[in-house]
Image (cartoon, rainbow, N blue to C red; front, side, top):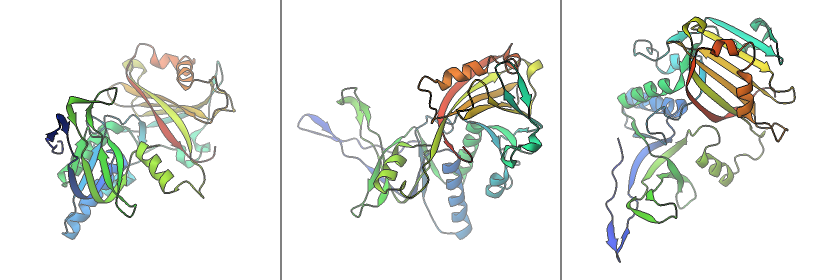
Length: 326
Protein backbone atom coordinates (compact mmCIF):
# COMPACT_ATOMS: atom_id res chain seq x y z
CA UNK A 1 0.00 0.00 0.00
CA UNK A 2 1.45 3.35 -1.02
CA UNK A 3 0.58 6.90 0.01
CA UNK A 4 -1.01 8.99 -2.74
CA UNK A 5 1.27 11.12 -4.89
CA UNK A 6 0.79 14.58 -6.35
CA UNK A 7 0.62 14.88 -10.12
CA UNK A 8 2.34 18.27 -10.26
CA UNK A 9 2.02 21.09 -12.76
CA UNK A 10 4.20 22.27 -15.61
CA UNK A 11 5.80 25.66 -15.06
CA UNK A 12 8.04 27.27 -17.67
CA UNK A 13 8.41 23.99 -19.55
CA UNK A 14 9.85 22.27 -16.44
CA UNK A 15 7.77 19.88 -14.45
CA UNK A 16 7.55 21.50 -11.01
CA UNK A 17 6.07 19.53 -8.19
CA UNK A 18 5.43 20.35 -4.60
CA UNK A 19 5.44 17.76 -1.88
CA UNK A 20 2.10 16.53 -0.73
CA UNK A 21 1.64 15.72 2.92
CA UNK A 22 -0.35 13.38 5.08
CA UNK A 23 -1.12 13.97 8.75
CA UNK A 24 -1.00 11.32 11.46
CA UNK A 25 -0.97 11.29 15.21
CA UNK A 26 2.14 9.10 15.27
CA UNK A 27 4.65 8.23 12.54
CA UNK A 28 7.08 5.37 13.16
CA UNK A 29 10.23 5.14 11.06
CA UNK A 30 11.28 1.51 10.69
CA UNK A 31 9.25 -1.71 10.53
CA UNK A 32 11.57 -3.78 12.69
CA UNK A 33 10.67 -5.47 16.00
CA UNK A 34 10.73 -2.17 17.93
CA UNK A 35 8.73 -0.11 15.45
CA UNK A 36 6.09 -2.78 14.87
CA UNK A 37 5.74 -3.57 18.57
CA UNK A 38 5.21 0.14 19.25
CA UNK A 39 2.55 0.32 16.54
CA UNK A 40 0.76 -2.71 17.97
CA UNK A 41 0.79 -1.37 21.52
CA UNK A 42 -0.42 2.05 20.43
CA UNK A 43 -3.34 0.56 18.53
CA UNK A 44 -4.12 -1.69 21.49
CA UNK A 45 -4.36 1.42 23.65
CA UNK A 46 -6.76 2.90 21.14
CA UNK A 47 -8.98 -0.16 21.40
CA UNK A 48 -8.81 -0.12 25.21
CA UNK A 49 -9.55 3.58 25.62
CA UNK A 50 -12.04 4.08 22.82
CA UNK A 51 -10.16 7.15 21.59
CA UNK A 52 -8.81 7.52 18.07
CA UNK A 53 -5.13 7.64 17.17
CA UNK A 54 -3.74 7.27 13.66
CA UNK A 55 -0.48 5.31 13.48
CA UNK A 56 1.69 5.09 10.37
CA UNK A 57 4.80 2.92 9.92
CA UNK A 58 7.19 3.37 6.98
CA UNK A 59 10.15 1.17 6.06
CA UNK A 60 12.83 1.28 3.38
CA UNK A 61 12.48 -2.44 2.60
CA UNK A 62 10.37 -3.61 -0.32
CA UNK A 63 8.31 -5.54 2.22
CA UNK A 64 8.21 -5.81 5.99
CA UNK A 65 11.14 -7.96 7.09
CA UNK A 66 13.17 -7.47 3.90
CA UNK A 67 16.02 -5.74 5.77
CA UNK A 68 15.94 -7.89 8.92
CA UNK A 69 19.13 -9.99 8.92
CA UNK A 70 19.76 -11.07 12.50
CA UNK A 71 19.92 -14.68 13.47
CA UNK A 72 18.02 -14.70 16.73
CA UNK A 73 17.57 -16.60 19.95
CA UNK A 74 14.30 -15.07 21.01
CA UNK A 75 13.09 -14.74 24.59
CA UNK A 76 9.31 -14.74 24.39
CA UNK A 77 8.46 -12.77 27.56
CA UNK A 78 8.02 -9.42 25.74
CA UNK A 79 5.76 -11.12 23.19
CA UNK A 80 3.83 -12.80 26.02
CA UNK A 81 3.05 -9.33 27.37
CA UNK A 82 2.32 -7.72 24.00
CA UNK A 83 0.23 -10.49 22.41
CA UNK A 84 -0.57 -13.13 25.06
CA UNK A 85 -2.30 -15.45 22.56
CA UNK A 86 0.54 -15.37 20.00
CA UNK A 87 0.58 -19.16 19.74
CA UNK A 88 -3.08 -19.26 18.70
CA UNK A 89 -2.39 -16.48 16.18
CA UNK A 90 0.31 -18.51 14.46
CA UNK A 91 3.43 -16.57 15.41
CA UNK A 92 6.43 -18.16 13.65
CA UNK A 93 8.15 -19.40 16.82
CA UNK A 94 8.61 -23.02 15.81
CA UNK A 95 11.90 -24.16 17.31
CA UNK A 96 12.59 -24.25 21.04
CA UNK A 97 16.21 -24.27 22.18
CA UNK A 98 16.80 -27.84 23.32
CA UNK A 99 20.58 -27.95 23.57
CA UNK A 100 23.33 -25.35 23.82
CA UNK A 101 27.11 -25.34 23.68
CA UNK A 102 29.81 -22.73 24.21
CA UNK A 103 33.28 -23.41 22.82
CA UNK A 104 36.61 -21.65 22.98
CA UNK A 105 38.58 -22.23 19.79
CA UNK A 106 42.30 -22.41 19.17
CA UNK A 107 43.75 -22.83 15.68
CA UNK A 108 43.23 -26.62 15.72
CA UNK A 109 41.24 -27.49 18.81
CA UNK A 110 38.06 -26.59 20.69
CA UNK A 111 37.31 -26.54 24.41
CA UNK A 112 33.73 -26.74 25.65
CA UNK A 113 32.81 -24.49 28.55
CA UNK A 114 29.87 -25.63 30.71
CA UNK A 115 27.01 -23.21 30.15
CA UNK A 116 26.33 -23.25 33.92
CA UNK A 117 29.55 -21.27 34.35
CA UNK A 118 28.48 -18.56 31.91
CA UNK A 119 26.55 -15.37 32.76
CA UNK A 120 22.78 -15.76 32.82
CA UNK A 121 22.45 -13.79 29.59
CA UNK A 122 24.15 -16.68 27.76
CA UNK A 123 21.52 -19.21 28.86
CA UNK A 124 18.94 -19.90 26.15
CA UNK A 125 16.98 -22.91 27.41
CA UNK A 126 13.30 -22.19 26.88
CA UNK A 127 14.00 -19.52 24.27
CA UNK A 128 13.16 -19.88 20.59
CA UNK A 129 15.36 -19.96 17.50
CA UNK A 130 13.55 -17.75 15.01
CA UNK A 131 13.80 -16.02 11.69
CA UNK A 132 13.48 -12.43 12.82
CA UNK A 133 12.40 -11.47 9.30
CA UNK A 134 9.45 -13.90 9.46
CA UNK A 135 8.60 -12.67 12.95
CA UNK A 136 8.51 -9.07 11.70
CA UNK A 137 6.22 -10.04 8.82
CA UNK A 138 3.85 -11.60 11.35
CA UNK A 139 4.07 -8.55 13.63
CA UNK A 140 3.25 -6.37 10.62
CA UNK A 141 0.10 -8.41 10.01
CA UNK A 142 -0.93 -7.97 13.65
CA UNK A 143 -0.32 -4.21 13.48
CA UNK A 144 -2.38 -3.82 10.31
CA UNK A 145 -5.19 -5.92 11.76
CA UNK A 146 -5.34 -3.43 14.64
CA UNK A 147 -5.58 -0.48 12.25
CA UNK A 148 -1.99 0.71 11.83
CA UNK A 149 -1.01 1.84 8.33
CA UNK A 150 2.23 0.28 7.05
CA UNK A 151 4.01 1.55 3.94
CA UNK A 152 7.03 -0.57 2.93
CA UNK A 153 9.27 0.67 0.15
CA UNK A 154 9.31 4.25 1.43
CA UNK A 155 12.59 5.28 3.03
CA UNK A 156 12.54 8.30 5.32
CA UNK A 157 15.11 10.70 3.89
CA UNK A 158 14.62 13.86 5.94
CA UNK A 159 13.44 14.94 9.39
CA UNK A 160 10.85 17.71 9.38
CA UNK A 161 10.93 20.48 11.99
CA UNK A 162 8.35 23.08 12.88
CA UNK A 163 9.02 26.80 13.39
CA UNK A 164 10.09 26.16 16.99
CA UNK A 165 12.63 23.54 15.95
CA UNK A 166 10.62 20.57 17.16
CA UNK A 167 10.37 17.36 15.14
CA UNK A 168 7.04 17.27 13.32
CA UNK A 169 7.46 14.29 11.01
CA UNK A 170 9.60 12.98 8.17
CA UNK A 171 9.75 13.17 4.40
CA UNK A 172 10.36 10.25 2.07
CA UNK A 173 12.97 10.49 -0.65
CA UNK A 174 12.35 11.78 -4.15
CA UNK A 175 11.94 9.19 -6.89
CA UNK A 176 13.08 9.34 -10.50
CA UNK A 177 16.31 11.26 -9.86
CA UNK A 178 19.19 10.62 -12.26
CA UNK A 179 22.78 10.04 -11.14
CA UNK A 180 23.66 13.64 -11.97
CA UNK A 181 20.81 14.94 -9.83
CA UNK A 182 18.49 15.89 -12.70
CA UNK A 183 14.89 14.80 -12.74
CA UNK A 184 13.79 12.02 -15.08
CA UNK A 185 10.37 11.93 -16.68
CA UNK A 186 9.36 9.54 -13.91
CA UNK A 187 10.32 12.04 -11.18
CA UNK A 188 8.05 12.20 -8.16
CA UNK A 189 8.80 14.33 -5.09
CA UNK A 190 8.87 12.78 -1.68
CA UNK A 191 5.83 12.67 0.57
CA UNK A 192 5.74 14.57 3.84
CA UNK A 193 4.38 12.51 6.72
CA UNK A 194 3.56 14.96 9.49
CA UNK A 195 2.82 13.81 13.01
CA UNK A 196 2.27 14.97 16.57
CA UNK A 197 4.86 12.39 17.63
CA UNK A 198 7.56 10.75 15.53
CA UNK A 199 9.22 7.54 16.72
CA UNK A 200 12.57 6.64 15.15
CA UNK A 201 13.10 2.86 15.12
CA UNK A 202 15.80 2.73 12.46
CA UNK A 203 18.05 0.26 14.25
CA UNK A 204 21.75 0.75 14.87
CA UNK A 205 23.18 4.08 13.61
CA UNK A 206 20.15 5.07 11.58
CA UNK A 207 20.79 7.87 9.11
CA UNK A 208 18.10 10.15 10.55
CA UNK A 209 18.90 9.19 14.14
CA UNK A 210 22.47 10.39 13.63
CA UNK A 211 21.25 13.82 12.55
CA UNK A 212 18.96 14.00 15.58
CA UNK A 213 21.79 13.06 17.94
CA UNK A 214 23.89 15.86 16.50
CA UNK A 215 21.13 18.48 16.40
CA UNK A 216 19.94 17.85 19.96
CA UNK A 217 23.35 16.86 21.44
CA UNK A 218 21.96 13.51 22.59
CA UNK A 219 25.45 12.03 22.89
CA UNK A 220 26.73 14.56 25.40
CA UNK A 221 27.17 13.54 29.02
CA UNK A 222 26.58 9.83 28.39
CA UNK A 223 28.84 6.83 27.90
CA UNK A 224 29.86 6.45 24.26
CA UNK A 225 28.15 3.63 22.38
CA UNK A 226 30.33 0.81 21.06
CA UNK A 227 29.53 -0.96 17.81
CA UNK A 228 30.18 -4.22 16.06
CA UNK A 229 29.48 -5.77 12.70
CA UNK A 230 27.56 -9.00 12.41
CA UNK A 231 27.86 -11.20 9.34
CA UNK A 232 25.27 -13.92 8.84
CA UNK A 233 24.73 -16.77 6.42
CA UNK A 234 21.68 -18.98 6.22
CA UNK A 235 22.62 -22.58 5.42
CA UNK A 236 20.64 -25.63 4.39
CA UNK A 237 22.51 -28.46 6.08
CA UNK A 238 22.84 -32.13 5.33
CA UNK A 239 19.98 -33.64 7.39
CA UNK A 240 22.49 -35.97 9.07
CA UNK A 241 24.38 -32.91 10.38
CA UNK A 242 21.37 -30.88 11.43
CA UNK A 243 20.17 -30.81 15.05
CA UNK A 244 17.01 -28.75 15.39
CA UNK A 245 17.06 -26.66 18.55
CA UNK A 246 20.86 -26.64 18.95
CA UNK A 247 22.53 -23.33 19.83
CA UNK A 248 26.33 -22.98 19.54
CA UNK A 249 28.44 -19.96 20.47
CA UNK A 250 32.21 -19.70 20.15
CA UNK A 251 34.99 -17.32 21.13
CA UNK A 252 38.69 -17.28 20.32
CA UNK A 253 40.22 -18.29 16.98
CA UNK A 254 40.55 -16.89 14.36
CA UNK A 255 40.67 -13.65 16.36
CA UNK A 256 43.25 -12.96 19.02
CA UNK A 257 42.50 -12.05 22.60
CA UNK A 258 42.95 -8.34 21.80
CA UNK A 259 39.90 -8.34 19.49
CA UNK A 260 36.37 -8.81 20.83
CA UNK A 261 34.03 -11.06 18.89
CA UNK A 262 32.71 -14.55 18.35
CA UNK A 263 30.29 -16.73 16.45
CA UNK A 264 26.75 -18.03 16.66
CA UNK A 265 25.21 -21.11 15.06
CA UNK A 266 21.46 -21.59 15.46
CA UNK A 267 19.79 -24.74 14.10
CA UNK A 268 16.29 -23.83 12.95
CA UNK A 269 13.64 -26.08 11.46
CA UNK A 270 13.72 -27.54 7.91
CA UNK A 271 17.44 -28.45 8.10
CA UNK A 272 18.39 -24.78 8.18
CA UNK A 273 21.00 -23.08 10.36
CA UNK A 274 21.89 -19.43 10.88
CA UNK A 275 25.69 -19.20 10.93
CA UNK A 276 27.13 -15.85 11.95
CA UNK A 277 30.18 -13.98 13.15
CA UNK A 278 30.41 -10.75 15.14
CA UNK A 279 33.46 -8.47 15.35
CA UNK A 280 33.64 -5.32 17.47
CA UNK A 281 34.50 -2.29 15.36
CA UNK A 282 37.17 -1.04 17.75
CA UNK A 283 39.70 -3.62 16.52
CA UNK A 284 43.24 -2.22 16.41
CA UNK A 285 44.66 -4.19 13.48
CA UNK A 286 44.01 -2.07 10.36
CA UNK A 287 44.45 -5.14 8.15
CA UNK A 288 41.78 -7.20 9.91
CA UNK A 289 38.82 -8.07 7.69
CA UNK A 290 35.71 -9.25 9.57
CA UNK A 291 34.49 -11.01 6.42
CA UNK A 292 37.76 -12.92 6.02
CA UNK A 293 37.75 -13.85 9.71
CA UNK A 294 34.27 -15.28 9.22
CA UNK A 295 35.42 -17.37 6.27
CA UNK A 296 38.41 -18.67 8.23
CA UNK A 297 36.16 -19.55 11.16
CA UNK A 298 34.13 -21.89 8.94
CA UNK A 299 37.28 -23.95 8.20
CA UNK A 300 37.88 -24.85 11.87
CA UNK A 301 37.85 -28.62 12.58
CA UNK A 302 34.96 -28.13 15.03
CA UNK A 303 32.85 -26.18 12.49
CA UNK A 304 33.68 -27.43 9.00
CA UNK A 305 32.13 -30.94 9.37
CA UNK A 306 28.74 -29.39 10.17
CA UNK A 307 28.74 -27.43 6.89
CA UNK A 308 30.02 -30.20 4.62
CA UNK A 309 27.31 -31.41 2.27
CA UNK A 310 25.23 -28.29 2.88
CA UNK A 311 24.74 -25.12 0.88
CA UNK A 312 24.57 -21.42 1.66
CA UNK A 313 21.22 -19.99 0.61
CA UNK A 314 21.40 -16.39 1.88
CA UNK A 315 23.81 -13.95 3.48
CA UNK A 316 24.07 -10.40 4.76
CA UNK A 317 25.65 -8.08 7.31
CA UNK A 318 24.58 -5.30 9.62
CA UNK A 319 25.90 -2.99 12.31
CA UNK A 320 25.22 -3.89 15.92
CA UNK A 321 25.03 -2.03 19.20
CA UNK A 322 27.37 -3.63 21.73
CA UNK A 323 26.88 -3.62 25.46
CA UNK A 324 28.00 -5.31 28.63
CA UNK A 325 31.59 -5.96 29.69
CA UNK A 326 33.97 -5.22 26.81
